[in-house]
Length: 450
Image 1 (cartoon, rainbow, N blue to C red):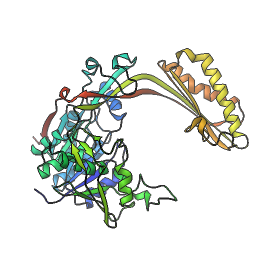
Image 2 (spheres, one colour):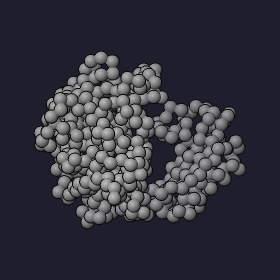
Image 3 (tube, rainbow, N blue to C red):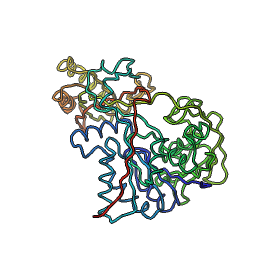
Image 4 (cartoon, one colour):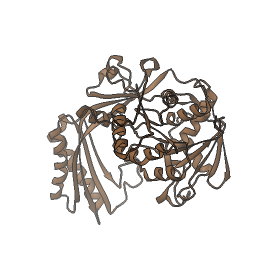
């Protein structure tokens, strides 16, 4: 058992910048680097790519990930864990092996983790959706994905099988980090207090540069240095799960008690019962102590048994959104934008009202965020933008919405900067499914040359 394991955060979401992660791999003296490659809609989009081409559906950055980090893996400098397999972990591993062969790499042992995808049986389960309170079968759209947030157990299995580059589907964000902790320190996955403490550390790492100042900067009240060069966090973890959070010295941002606390409560509805696939984490009594500059000790979280259900994100195709935008500037801009909105409401409702599911027209800069509660409603602004968005199942009508905005070129006066586009609507719904509906599978594949 190691006395300290160093784990770095490599990515916080599907399109995160990989350059800071490359710095970590080069200079961080890491044992592991973990990549979260997902966001709520990412899986549904990947599922649609997979439907169109069964060999796709993985992270669009996969080639960059493998080319950048597999050489470090080959040299034994670190191991890589991530959910960059997205909707197609097996195809992702096949592609990764092919890339390694092109690079002449040998000592890379990949593992694919599957079992999170229950798209084939979610409709028969027909769960109640959180957002509507109704059964999935009561939706009118087409189900395109159903993926559960799964835990660290298959990651531990992959490491036990000798894998050093692990590619999963919807591995839960904190579970990416719990896997190597449990493996290195020989934790039982039923040791709730250790898994709870480890989950707190994982939660601090999972959002990347949030904990090094990105989620903390709020000038002039909270000033963070060199935000243009934020460094990713590193955790130096002890067998107890207690850890030091730090970063590379030559990167921007900072690690302080304040940045730690800001991330600690981020997206946590109940700090006493933070539910993950691995544990019910209690971070209410967690302790934070600044030791020296950019080194903060964190300890004191505990845990209880994991939930009996897993959260599942269900992606549903619900038609198209047609959008259009136009700007108004100078004296009277606010009034001309309000007139534009009035005209658009009347024209769109008269022409397409019965075939539009939802319609929203905002004046960006005036009331697009706070609506009628905004304090600016009676003020005169000199730079605003009208945005129209309509959802419909008819693609032709979605295209017509942008044309209606473009027609505003002929009045009110002074409109400009027109923009129009159409996109598919992938609505995401959340639900819970019993754990026993899921069976994980770990497959290991080495780079072999004929």
